[in-house]
Image (cartoon, rainbow, N blue to C red; front, side, top):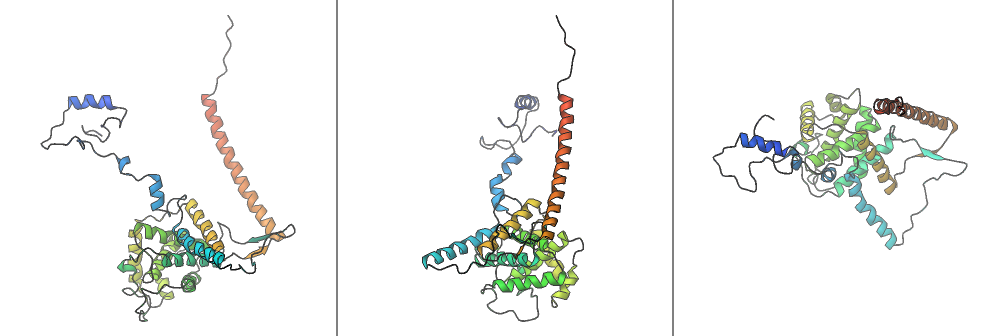
Amino acid sequence: MGGSVSCCISPGESPKIHRREVELEECPITTTEDVSEDTGTYLQHISDRELPDELAQEANPSDHPRASTLFLNKSQTDVREKRKSNYMNHTSPGLLTKKYSSCSTIFIDDSTVSQPNLKSTIKCVALAIYYHIKNRDSNRSLDIFDEKKHPLTREKVPDDYAVVDPEHKLIYRFIRTLFSSAQLTAECAIVTLVYLERLLTYAEMDICPCNWKRIVLGAILLASKVWDDQAVWNVDYCQILKDITVEDMNEMERHFLELLQFNINVPASVYAKYYFDLRSLADDNNLSFPLEPLSNKRAQKLEAISRLCEDKYKDLSKSNMRRSISADNLIGVRKSKAVLS
């Protein structure tokens, strides 16, 4: 600010170049070291050190709504192979179990972005974690999440615990037990998946058979504290998992936050992206949400919710219109008396 050297003195970097040249002539820089012509005495501008938006979105899908989720990309490999195998072997898709609406009956599920279905959401999150483990790039991990070094139970960890991939049902039962015992909501499950993928991106690690339980537990622990008003304490999880200690839970939570760089913010756009990507994952794997015929009572409820949202939008539009009108009055054409010559 007040020094003679600034990061905006190179030609073409600042519109105040001529004024800076005058200042530099009055206060010449003296140095004892020889400076090359390529680098000079100029400092790198902060904008040159920042990643472009495209690279930042690819690196952090849990932070940017336009970046594709990791679990959906990993699942597409199996989906394409399954479709190719059915086509090559002329396998029939079988009986169509999905219900379709007609003129007289409308089928609709009870899951929305604001109130997801708990059971279906947990199944989809477990399936996303399953594809993360199955299609992982490597086995990069940290000791704090290693189940052999920090076991969750007193039972002996099998020798092949780091080799055998867990099945989808095993992951689902583990998550369902925690959610049912702690009485967590479906929104918390979506935030759990956001934190899990953010951890894998920030820490540059993989979720694999040796660490998936502790990573999922840490993500659920953090998501429940951030999302729910009355969060479950660490000691409560020790009652669910009988053999884990509070000190271990505290240490894992501290490491989890440090690896996330204390970035626990989940924008609404990112949350919605994960919700709809989970629905796409369910459709690709025949995990359809339960459909029910639309009743008169439910139709009236949906209509009331729609009317409420529409009223809020109208109020917001009116307030924005008032602000624009008041601004127009300030800069608008003023009425003046005509002068006739």
